[in-house]
Length: 380
Picture 1 (cartoon, rainbow, N blue to C red):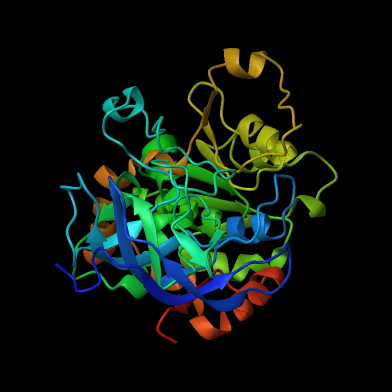
Picture 2 (cartoon, helix red, strand yellow):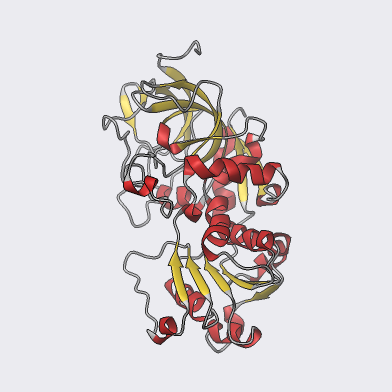
């Protein structure tokens, strides 16, 4: 049992006091974990676009002060009552969604959308008692998606923590707890491209590049990247992308361009932008008879997907996915093993690193569109 177990821990956290303003490194108090909770020491975290989106308070209920962060790797410091799966010292990845293992979704082999721990961006407190585990001078600080990894210590529900191989380097595999697994799983678990097939990837950000990496691992012969930013094309070659098209270079709809390039359509497509026009293109560009399109990007709340029903009747399949259809506790350890046995290359996703004291630099890089993932070393 750790010497800090059962006690309040004082540590550094990057607190967002208001929308769009630089995070402030503060000393916070982190309460001990309650029933079915664990307290983690975060060693490395990375910045995901979702953190920036909610920090900017675009299109949802603003909640401040708040501790963001949800892609991370750490070590269990202590566990609350009823926790049997984890113990102090375990190496873990906290996850923005969860797996309670009790609900109908968790018991289904077909779903990973846990009823209890499914992502909830509006919840700023713990599920068990509706309270925050973070405070400054007695004033509560809100949690973010059950993880809040921009703190040296954080408290999570046990169902949102995946135990992984202790030999896996946390400064690398921390990026597997969100975007990379989302894109990778969208291809490997949902699109399932046959060896030698043609795959189109819409959007070449971190998730799209991970989807391309999945196509490469699956043995696709052609991986066509579609993006409005031609500067992304060179980088994408490292992830197996073989051809690139920019919709701005064509007068006709991009689905028609893809159909002409591929003798009637691609075998699989994965849409990673959330733009509804791209979603429709991703569906309409797949081949009739066997084509499968997978939607990953999250659309605007008022968006509507419109296509002619004949596109479906002609045996095209449209699918959606959440977190790459991975169950966090059951499946993430095997994704880490893909990295450990050199099947999955994680290093090429990591383009920058900064010490925790300079976390705002990571936000600056993302806002400028530079790089893919920036690792934040919590000890710096």
